[in-house]
Amino acid sequence: MKEKENRELLSEYSLEEIAEVFVRIRRENYLIHMIPNGVSVSLCADGLAALGARPLMAVAPEEMTEIVSQADSCVINLGQLTKEKQEAAELALKQGAESGKPLVLDPVGCGASRFRMEAVQELLNMPWRGILKGNRSEIYSIQQGKLTKEGIDSIKERSLTRQIPQARVYLVTGETDDILWETGKTEISHREGIYRNLVGTGCLTGAVAGACYCAAAQIVEETQERSQAVQIETEAGKQGGAAEALKSMKLAAVATSLAMAYVLEQAGKAEGYGRAKNALLDALEQLSEKNFLEWLLWRQTCSDRIDTGLWQLL
Ligand SMILES: Nc1ncnc2c1ncn2[C@@H]1O[C@H](COP(=O)(O)OP(=O)(O)O)[C@@H](O)[C@H]1O
Ligand SMILES: Cc1ncsc1CCOP(=O)(O)O
Image 1 (tube, rainbow, N blue to C red):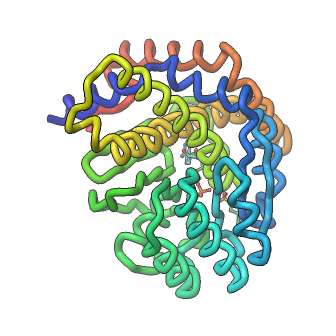
Image 2 (image 1 turned 30 degrees about the vertical axis):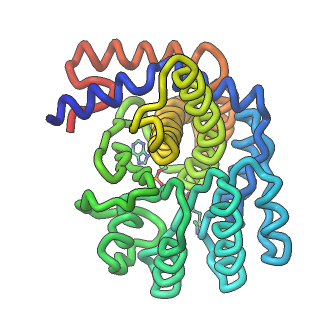
């Protein structure tokens, strides 16, 4: 059963399709609106630009509906949360859901204070479809409704439940990233290379997910259109909306996780914290080039050799 789940995911997305996500971001120059935090705003804006996307960082509730309407996707990062930011996040999720935009929510440090936890729970109770990206501690806090008081980091080992709402995909980051959805789960290991904990890489992961989600939605839609052109309408086809949306979210999460594994590996080779941050941005720029597909193929070959698989069995 576990093996079947894993094979299904492998057959769902080829490495070429994953690499195509980044070629598309550069070609389409998606406008990614992010409600950022002051600590990582430059890294996220630079990171999106390095990918070939167009960042737009807006925070004022007064302009949120207009801004979300014109963006291709919206990433809501709750770091440095204030009441005003919470209001902006609610408006962004509402407008994003109404206009069917790809949405990513990053509940930064939601286990650190009651204020953050309550705000996150309210936002999660709203009806929107999208990706929830958090470290293991943040997702644990959300699932258990408990404060973990680990600051913004994930320090302790935490077990997560498999109860994921239907319209959401969770991208849980750490040494191994977990991608969870209502009926399944996969793991992507980041253990290769030397890892350096650079401030803002969690936020950057959310920003990258926002860009990947735009490309993934287009890729999935085009694949669906091609298959509909040769098929008569089936029951599965009629229910295509939710299934397609789930596929886009999963492809976006897988592409984000592997891209971050690649860029963090490049950053890990640089000497010194400052150089590592620049190496991270330079590596983001390479994702749309053939280096990244070659790295994916190389990684798969290595994984096959040590018999773990690119996507680890669950
Ligand atoms: N020990 C680790 N080894 C390799 N990569 C890691 C490790 N911990 C986190 N990462 C990666 O670093 C990025 C940021 O994740 P994380 O540090 O968990 O987020 P946050 O900054 O929100 O706590 C993600 O791409 C994640 O996969
Ligand atoms: C340090 C800090 N404090 C509030 S937001 C923030 C940045 C979060 O960075 P990361 O992406 O590494 O979790």
